[in-house]
Image (tube, rainbow, N blue to C red):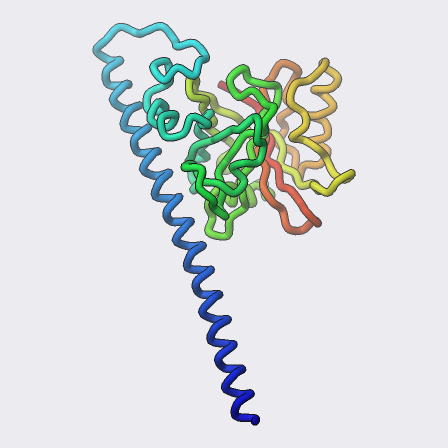
Length: 263
């Protein structure tokens, strides 16, 4: 009897190990697949931008394109992104990190890309996506982008480093392009809060300020919750960007990197 129980225990352990190994392997493969896909897109965009820059040296400057979803009016390379997925609204990059990928948005299904890749296929890694009510092109006073805090270092995992001012001192700039305009943002506050119902700071719900006081109150709260003082205080009329990911020292925590547009 003891021998049978021992054998069953061993078999169960082997099965459990096999299932765990499969899940870990699948997680890593999914991460690599998405990483390779974004690298390929980034390469195509970079090549198109380089070719456009070279061409501009020998041709007269053209009129700036209007804010439009017309692929012909998009910045070099971003037409490729839009053709792959018409939910694409921009591209985000932080130099010196793994973050370099597309930003998507679905106004009628706010969290669709929480667990979907750029091809709209189910994915635990999800995608970087903009809050549904924010207007990326206008833009709204505040645009919040969401992304998973992945253990493989992808998506918004790099944001964790910014809880230390050392990371901010080394690089505090975020490149966030729309499909029609290049923009750079500077980090002014990094904070954590709870996403539990009735708790915490609902930063993503601030989209357009009703007045100057509302804008100032939002900025003040960001700075009050911040891990450290950056010495930067946005003023009414500035455009803000919040990057949001999971934070694990709080119950249902969120880590937020708030930045102000400088170009």
